[in-house]
Image (cartoon, rainbow, N blue to C red):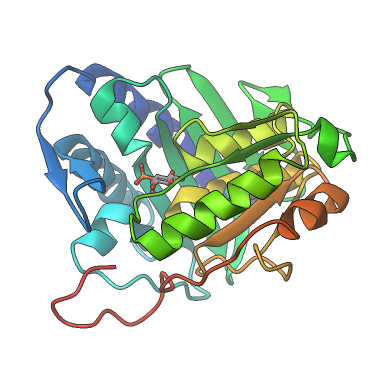
Length: 284
Ligand code: LIP
C-alpha cells in the first residue's frame, strides 16, 4: 500500500501551484485592501478567495480532514489542533508584500496527523520556487535537495526576523531591543523578506542561519517547520524550550548552537496563543 500521506502531499503541491498562479495574476496596483486587527494587519479578497479554493478542494477530496486557515480563523472559526488529519494553511503569506507588489509572497500548506507535522509545502509564487518536505524524507526546492548551513559561529551568521503587525510600544521596544543586541554581537546581517514561511525556507536553503519571530501564527510557519527540520535544521521556542505550534513564538535555525546563542539575545514576550478561546467581540 502506498504512503497515504504522500498522496495527500501531492494534492497539496497541486493546490499550492494553482493558488500561487491566482496570487500572481492578482498582483496589481491599488488593489482593494481590508483591515483585520489593526491598520497594518492587511487582508485582501485574494487571501479569502485562495483560502476558499483550498478549503473546497480539501472538503471534496478529504471530507473527514480538519482545516485551520488564517482567514477562517479571522472570520471566527476556532483554531484547534486535534489528532485528526489537519490542514494548516496560510493562503497568502506576505499579504503586505502582495498589496505593495514586493516580490515575496507564499502559499503555505502544513499538514499534521496526531498533532505531528507530516508534510509542509511552501510555494513562493512570485519566484516560482516550490519548497516541499515530507517527514523523514528530506526537503526540496523545485525538486533539488535542501541542506541548512553548517555555520556554528553567530558572528558569521545571517539572521532573519520580522516586525509583525503589533505596534504596541512595549512590544516594539522588545523587538528593537532584541534587534540591537543581535546586530551588535555582531552578526554579518539581519534580513526579513516579509513572510515567515519564506524566511524558514531560506533557513532550509542554507542562506539564512536562523530565523526568529514572536507574534507569528501557526499557519505562517507550520509548513516551514517541516522544511527546516527535513533540511537538517532545528526548531525551538524563543525562550529556549521546545517549539509549541500554537504559541506564536518560533526559532528556526541551522543547528542548536546558533539557535541557543540567538535565544540568549531575544527579549521574549508572550502573545495570546492561536488556540486561546475566542472571547466574544474581540480580535486576536
Ligand atoms: C505575515 C507573517 C510575518 C509576520 C507578518 C504577517 P501574513 O503573515 O508571515 O512573519 O511578521 O506580520 O503575519 O499575515 O502576511 O499571512
